[in-house]
Image 1 (spheres, rainbow, N blue to C red):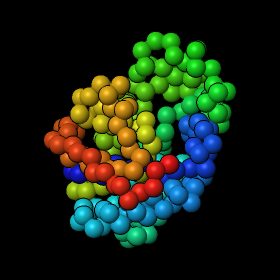
Image 2 (cartoon, rainbow, N blue to C red):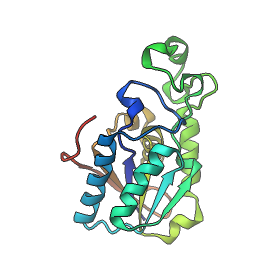
Image 3 (tube, rainbow, N blue to C red):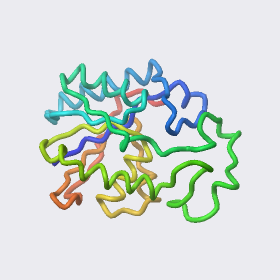
Length: 198
Protein backbone atom coordinates (compact mmCIF):
# COMPACT_ATOMS: atom_id res chain seq x y z
CA UNK A 1 0.00 0.00 0.00
CA UNK A 2 1.31 3.42 -0.97
CA UNK A 3 0.45 6.53 1.03
CA UNK A 4 0.90 10.00 -0.44
CA UNK A 5 1.18 12.33 2.56
CA UNK A 6 0.12 15.94 2.05
CA UNK A 7 -0.10 18.71 4.62
CA UNK A 8 -3.02 21.10 4.19
CA UNK A 9 -2.38 24.41 2.45
CA UNK A 10 -1.31 27.65 4.11
CA UNK A 11 -3.96 29.22 6.36
CA UNK A 12 -4.81 32.83 7.13
CA UNK A 13 -4.14 32.04 10.80
CA UNK A 14 -0.64 30.62 10.19
CA UNK A 15 0.24 33.80 8.27
CA UNK A 16 -0.51 35.67 11.50
CA UNK A 17 1.42 33.26 13.75
CA UNK A 18 -1.69 31.75 15.36
CA UNK A 19 -1.51 28.17 16.68
CA UNK A 20 -4.60 26.35 15.41
CA UNK A 21 -4.35 22.86 16.83
CA UNK A 22 -7.84 21.41 16.33
CA UNK A 23 -9.50 24.73 15.47
CA UNK A 24 -10.94 24.79 11.91
CA UNK A 25 -8.57 27.17 10.13
CA UNK A 26 -9.18 29.03 6.86
CA UNK A 27 -7.13 28.37 3.73
CA UNK A 28 -5.43 31.45 2.31
CA UNK A 29 -5.49 32.19 -1.42
CA UNK A 30 -1.91 30.92 -1.54
CA UNK A 31 -2.93 27.76 0.34
CA UNK A 32 -5.57 27.01 -2.28
CA UNK A 33 -3.00 27.44 -5.05
CA UNK A 34 -0.63 25.10 -3.21
CA UNK A 35 -3.22 22.33 -3.17
CA UNK A 36 -4.08 22.76 -6.85
CA UNK A 37 -0.37 22.55 -7.72
CA UNK A 38 0.12 19.40 -5.63
CA UNK A 39 -2.87 17.73 -7.30
CA UNK A 40 -1.56 18.51 -10.78
CA UNK A 41 1.88 17.17 -9.86
CA UNK A 42 0.37 13.91 -8.58
CA UNK A 43 -1.49 13.57 -11.88
CA UNK A 44 1.61 14.36 -13.97
CA UNK A 45 3.72 11.85 -12.02
CA UNK A 46 1.19 9.06 -12.63
CA UNK A 47 0.85 8.22 -8.94
CA UNK A 48 -2.66 6.86 -9.66
CA UNK A 49 -4.29 7.38 -6.23
CA UNK A 50 -7.67 5.69 -5.72
CA UNK A 51 -9.10 7.65 -2.80
CA UNK A 52 -8.37 10.52 -0.40
CA UNK A 53 -8.48 10.17 3.38
CA UNK A 54 -8.60 13.57 5.10
CA UNK A 55 -8.74 15.08 8.55
CA UNK A 56 -12.22 16.45 9.26
CA UNK A 57 -10.95 19.92 10.23
CA UNK A 58 -12.00 22.68 7.81
CA UNK A 59 -8.53 23.57 6.52
CA UNK A 60 -7.84 19.95 5.57
CA UNK A 61 -11.35 19.31 4.23
CA UNK A 62 -11.01 22.34 1.94
CA UNK A 63 -7.54 21.21 0.87
CA UNK A 64 -8.80 17.70 0.12
CA UNK A 65 -11.75 19.04 -1.90
CA UNK A 66 -9.40 20.96 -4.20
CA UNK A 67 -7.29 17.84 -4.78
CA UNK A 68 -10.38 15.65 -5.21
CA UNK A 69 -11.90 17.99 -7.80
CA UNK A 70 -8.75 17.95 -9.96
CA UNK A 71 -8.06 14.21 -9.62
CA UNK A 72 -11.75 13.20 -9.59
CA UNK A 73 -11.47 11.20 -6.37
CA UNK A 74 -13.79 10.48 -3.46
CA UNK A 75 -12.91 11.69 0.05
CA UNK A 76 -13.31 9.96 3.39
CA UNK A 77 -12.94 12.06 6.55
CA UNK A 78 -11.50 10.81 9.82
CA UNK A 79 -11.01 12.43 13.24
CA UNK A 80 -7.93 10.22 13.65
CA UNK A 81 -6.13 12.40 11.07
CA UNK A 82 -6.60 15.62 13.05
CA UNK A 83 -3.77 17.88 14.14
CA UNK A 84 -2.42 17.53 17.67
CA UNK A 85 -4.83 19.15 20.12
CA UNK A 86 -3.28 22.36 21.44
CA UNK A 87 -5.44 22.80 24.54
CA UNK A 88 -5.17 26.25 26.10
CA UNK A 89 -2.64 27.32 23.41
CA UNK A 90 -5.15 27.04 20.56
CA UNK A 91 -6.07 30.34 18.96
CA UNK A 92 -3.10 32.14 20.54
CA UNK A 93 -0.09 33.77 18.92
CA UNK A 94 3.39 32.43 19.67
CA UNK A 95 4.16 35.25 22.13
CA UNK A 96 0.94 34.59 24.07
CA UNK A 97 1.74 30.97 24.86
CA UNK A 98 3.34 29.80 28.12
CA UNK A 99 6.33 27.97 26.56
CA UNK A 100 8.21 27.65 29.86
CA UNK A 101 5.51 25.41 31.32
CA UNK A 102 5.16 23.48 28.04
CA UNK A 103 8.86 22.70 27.61
CA UNK A 104 9.18 20.54 30.75
CA UNK A 105 10.03 16.88 30.12
CA UNK A 106 10.83 14.88 26.94
CA UNK A 107 9.40 16.41 23.76
CA UNK A 108 7.43 13.28 22.85
CA UNK A 109 5.33 13.71 26.03
CA UNK A 110 5.02 17.50 26.06
CA UNK A 111 1.58 19.05 25.80
CA UNK A 112 -0.23 22.26 26.61
CA UNK A 113 -2.82 22.16 29.39
CA UNK A 114 -5.88 20.40 28.00
CA UNK A 115 -3.93 19.36 24.91
CA UNK A 116 -2.40 16.25 23.40
CA UNK A 117 1.18 14.92 23.42
CA UNK A 118 3.09 13.68 20.38
CA UNK A 119 3.00 10.16 21.81
CA UNK A 120 -0.82 10.35 21.89
CA UNK A 121 -0.83 11.48 18.25
CA UNK A 122 1.45 8.54 17.43
CA UNK A 123 -1.12 6.17 18.93
CA UNK A 124 -3.75 7.77 16.69
CA UNK A 125 -1.51 7.15 13.67
CA UNK A 126 -1.18 3.49 14.62
CA UNK A 127 -4.96 3.24 15.06
CA UNK A 128 -5.53 4.84 11.65
CA UNK A 129 -3.31 2.28 9.91
CA UNK A 130 -5.52 -0.49 11.31
CA UNK A 131 -8.67 0.79 9.56
CA UNK A 132 -9.88 -2.17 7.45
CA UNK A 133 -10.88 0.07 4.52
CA UNK A 134 -7.26 1.08 3.95
CA UNK A 135 -6.37 -2.43 2.84
CA UNK A 136 -8.83 -2.16 -0.05
CA UNK A 137 -6.65 0.39 -1.85
CA UNK A 138 -3.16 0.30 -3.34
CA UNK A 139 -2.52 4.06 -3.41
CA UNK A 140 -4.10 6.54 -0.99
CA UNK A 141 -3.71 10.29 -0.54
CA UNK A 142 -3.68 11.42 3.11
CA UNK A 143 -4.44 15.09 3.69
CA UNK A 144 -3.56 15.91 7.27
CA UNK A 145 -1.37 18.07 9.52
CA UNK A 146 2.31 18.31 10.39
CA UNK A 147 2.21 16.60 13.79
CA UNK A 148 0.07 13.69 12.59
CA UNK A 149 2.10 13.10 9.43
CA UNK A 150 5.36 13.26 11.39
CA UNK A 151 4.11 10.76 13.97
CA UNK A 152 2.82 8.46 11.22
CA UNK A 153 6.33 8.38 9.76
CA UNK A 154 7.84 8.01 13.24
CA UNK A 155 5.67 4.94 13.86
CA UNK A 156 5.99 3.26 10.46
CA UNK A 157 9.68 3.93 9.95
CA UNK A 158 10.70 3.37 13.58
CA UNK A 159 12.12 6.89 13.51
CA UNK A 160 12.60 9.01 16.62
CA UNK A 161 9.92 11.65 17.11
CA UNK A 162 12.50 14.48 17.17
CA UNK A 163 13.81 13.48 13.75
CA UNK A 164 10.35 12.96 12.28
CA UNK A 165 9.18 16.38 13.46
CA UNK A 166 11.98 18.01 11.45
CA UNK A 167 10.51 16.75 8.17
CA UNK A 168 9.22 19.67 6.10
CA UNK A 169 5.79 18.87 4.68
CA UNK A 170 5.11 22.34 3.30
CA UNK A 171 5.85 22.59 -0.43
CA UNK A 172 6.47 18.85 -0.74
CA UNK A 173 4.80 15.50 -0.44
CA UNK A 174 6.11 12.34 1.12
CA UNK A 175 5.42 8.94 -0.38
CA UNK A 176 5.41 5.89 1.91
CA UNK A 177 5.20 2.27 0.85
CA UNK A 178 3.62 0.32 3.72
CA UNK A 179 4.02 -3.42 4.11
CA UNK A 180 1.32 -5.69 5.52
CA UNK A 181 2.92 -5.31 8.93
CA UNK A 182 2.48 -1.51 8.63
CA UNK A 183 6.20 -0.98 8.26
CA UNK A 184 7.81 1.24 5.70
CA UNK A 185 9.48 -0.48 2.79
CA UNK A 186 10.74 2.76 1.28
CA UNK A 187 10.26 6.46 1.84
CA UNK A 188 11.24 9.48 -0.17
CA UNK A 189 10.35 13.14 -0.40
CA UNK A 190 9.22 14.68 -3.65
CA UNK A 191 10.01 18.38 -3.56
CA UNK A 192 7.54 20.74 -5.16
CA UNK A 193 9.45 23.94 -6.05
CA UNK A 194 6.49 25.23 -8.06
CA UNK A 195 4.49 25.73 -4.86
CA UNK A 196 4.86 29.19 -3.37
CA UNK A 197 6.44 29.16 0.07
CA UNK A 198 4.44 30.45 3.00
